[in-house]
Length: 211
Image (tube, one colour):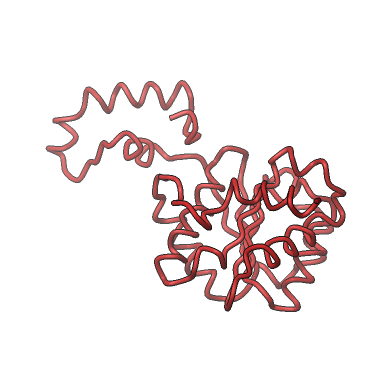
């Protein structure tokens, strides 16, 4: 029964039998993640809340699928889903993995992505165990203020590569609004809209959800 509940939660977040959601591309970050993923180390994507870390994971899933990895071989876990709070936290990650392996039955190389991992106590010990047995490629995301504790540094020193994510710069903000500037002529032709968007950017900042 417990695994049934966990599988129901995982099914809501994973693209095993449905398409991935539409997302906005952030090429510089995506290229950095793809490059560092080749190392085999744990990929740690860190940044302030709402800076776009989860979207970058989704875009990495798209890249992996485009390279030929089956959807069922990728496990995405949103650890901010409050339904997970009903389970014992110290054993949750292992139960999630067991449920995925039993119900989805991936074959071949696998990937586990833990989003907002700092919500799970002693998560770094579980990630270290998974890293050492080498059963899956690992990605984790977390907020700077909570992720980078002493335990994290001690457990995973030399075993991870990090990617620091920031809110949108103004150029990215313009792209979010389908404004591309490749020349002086582009700027002149769209300067009214650019000024309007700049005022909005100054007022509300560059967090993607507030664009």
